[in-house]
Picture 1 (cartoon, rainbow, N blue to C red):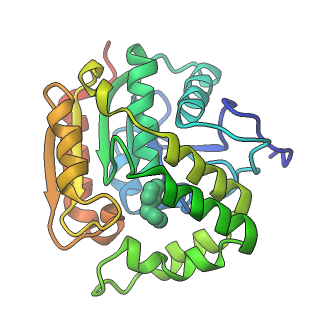
Picture 2: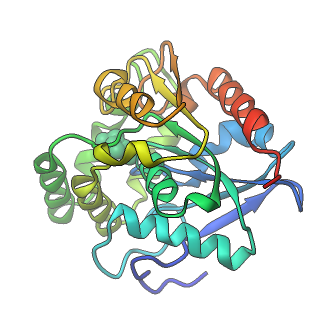
Length: 263
Ligand SMILES: O=C(O)CC1=CCC(=O)O1
């Protein structure tokens, strides 16, 4: 793996699992996590799909970014990755920032997205100010201060399995994290959701603080033509980790219905 900084729009650090020749599903992680965010879903998904997981710049095994980038650049990187791998069309599922990348991908390259799952995400992650402040904090003090509060943002108080996920954040490159915050500050596709043609499932955590169902998931589901919304009880922001069974079931049912590798 190269460790030189990654330019905006470059194909991301990635990994393929599952049967050769099966229809491809791309899995996008959230801010501060790695591709292993998707480990709870991996056994079920690799039964029928070739699973392509990737890391955000400076996260997981990915080198830090060489400069600023937007969510559109991250989506362009997925298109380049699909080109490099010879994949004409794929399904895409993403959590939070990873979901924003999927939304942008569906807008920029609709012919490449056969099916879309948007988990605990939003067409706009609130006002830019707090994201710019978080980016400045991490550039100044490192990821420690945001890691300290991560379990409370990501999970309900009853959840006891937060440690490996918070460890992902503690291992994240500060500039990679900060640049993702800047990308979130700029992201707003609220007015473009009606252009999305991919069959879309929106999944929300009932108790998600950063992207609550009301004002976020409901806007996605209301704005994307034909989209369906599933709200997962007793789950916060990383619902696929906190309640893996219903989330895995919802994703596999949606993929079964929409993406078997044809077309
Ligand atoms: O603030 C967080 O850690 C939650 C979050 C917002 C966007 C994202 O990807 O994660």
